[in-house]
Length: 259
Image (cartoon, rainbow, N blue to C red):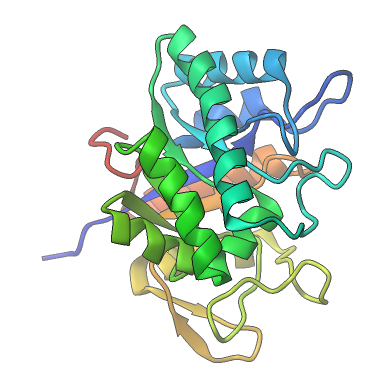
């Protein structure tokens, strides 16, 4: 009997701010199953948050909070020396902001995925990971915590009894320890769409990814991050969904029973 495979396609959204527009949110929504919506710290504003929540609900896409570091200028991609307590407080604050819009629009918060530097810091710092997981547990204990596959954030969520989704990346390369190649290093990004899609299919079906060193790394792929702000983002989103479905892989949000 053939093994059944399922995976989520998630995308960071709501990252426009004021007069600045970023991403192709409305066009990409039909191709994904969960949306990570910026909460105003690294990007987003009240109007953008409301609009993005409405769009996600219209398309039946699972809504997630995407809390980041308070760094609009650096788009939340620069590390900051925040304490675990500060990380907890800023996460609770942002979860509350998005939850208010979701509730006002008649929806529910399905998941939480930290953004950028906060995500990467929590992947390797157990104390920080525990603070973020605790924030999710206190505000949305029923929600799913998205984190880098095999990371400290996943372990922290599991320890608290949260639903967790181990995340992999379509357009990023990997190190032998299972972490992403830092963006500032050469070959951090996979620029060939065919190679990126082949990497995802293998991660889902075989549970392996080839590191830049050439060795295979064991990895669990519950959810795949695709980026919505590239020049060919829409085309890539459509192509990766079609390819996964052609491979017999069900596309659905974690802990949901419908595609």
